[in-house]
Amino acid sequence: MLRTAPIITIAKQEASGRTNAWIVYLGGGEEANRAIFKYVNRPRPKMLPSSYRYELAAYELNKLLGLELIPATVERTIEGRPGSLQCYCRDVITEASRRRKNLAPENTSGFQDAFSELGLFENLTNNPREDASDILINTTDWKVWRVDFSEAFAPDPVLLPESPFSRCARKLYQKLRETTDAEFSGRLGLYLGEEEVRSLLVRKRLILDRLESLIRDKGEASVLFEP
Image (tube, rainbow, N blue to C red; front, side, top):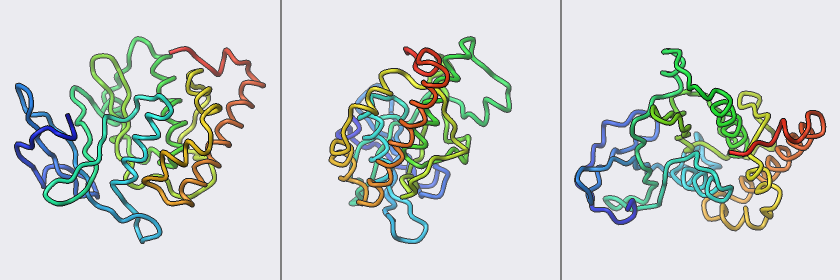
């Protein structure tokens, strides 16, 4: 639908942020569906790197690991500009708003687990949660989404202290262990530079080392959960 739906209108000044994103209204149903279009392409090693290709890489990594942290995102050309087009999340509040309103779900442990997995993914993409407005939470089922990866994948082979994680789903742990470096490189090399991919693979190993250390210290049942 994102790739082929007809474009009804484009709002070029409505979206906030540094990427000059457009809000695109797509047809094909009873009402227009909003999507976010990013077209800035200033990849590393350029100064102040920001690129829609990092958005696409993050979504592909999200799919490779069997996660559903990022709304559907595709590559599409609009008005002659190639870019990333991402579904606009409905019925959500930002994490910043949730904190201000002191809201919490009944299932707090599941909510905390979702944030732990989010922290793991932020480490993998090297995209810290500097702005809690980039974390979106569905107001019905408390599903956690993460948006804005246009500056992700800086080639730093270290983990992020500001994005902690201590648990993850067993299936995510298995995916990290079983997916080969060649699979990561083949999938993400379409969007990332060689150094960005190499650093991501180092961070993957550091994440596995931390999880395995936690399993040794606390036991598997305390670190790996079933969704």
